[in-house]
Length: 340
View 1 (cartoon, one colour):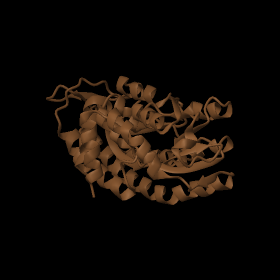
View 2 (cartoon, helix red, strand yellow):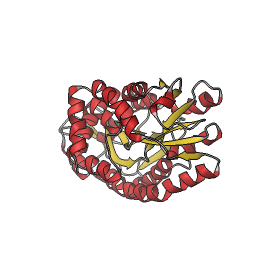
View 3 (cartoon, one colour):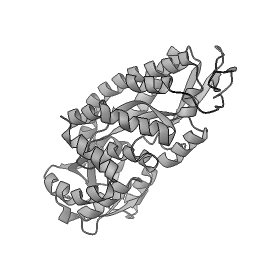
View 4 (spheres, one colour):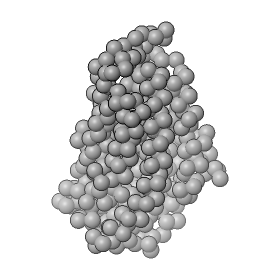
């Protein structure tokens, strides 16, 4: 992320920005109002969909702590888990509108920045090492640059996600088992197309509605990493975690461009340093906790179905992936497959 930091800090600041919280401002040569008062507090609000015991929330708390330390308390971040500020799309709009300042978000950003779809293309990444090689290389920087330009937010650091798996009340091992299966997917067109091609009946639903949807039989299943299956309490309404491992992906902690650019250069530097340290903390927590989530789900009565024909799912989804991606997206997808 160091190269991204240079991109953001070194680029021309084009927007007239409102100061976040109280404090004095100074107009720079670029016409941007900067926060300059050293004793005033800048209050930032941060939203995400996970529960308080989730890795994302714990990492967000560490990030907020580090930001406070490195800015001598000048930036104070309040964190709102469990979609308290709204669903992901709603909060992204709130960040761009200045009502929220930070968010944990991922492939939903493709609704503005098409290259963000590559954060979660089914069967694009072989494993964790392949994913991180992409994120930290040229392809990752290309995606981040488009996010800054088209979404209006700046990625501060990324967190790897556990593979997405399909949950259900009955075991699902092949695409043929998906006949008549109504499942929730996030607001990602590629997910809709891929699961439709595999034989399911997908529908978009915010994560905070999934438990009730499963409980009432509106949907039969959903797909998510083990951490979100746990934090959403889905073990109470689902019996199987089918190891499709159809998506290896990552997610970003982002801040609104306007909010970030309103900071003095010293405060920007402090935020980026806090982001680098929070990422290290989050990576260590990820390795430790993912196995714990699996163990906990099994203790809660869920069965992990390893008898899944992943090649069959991949083959079933491939035509939908190719037709759903634009020419530019598909070219990037092919580049990802070639990364060693």
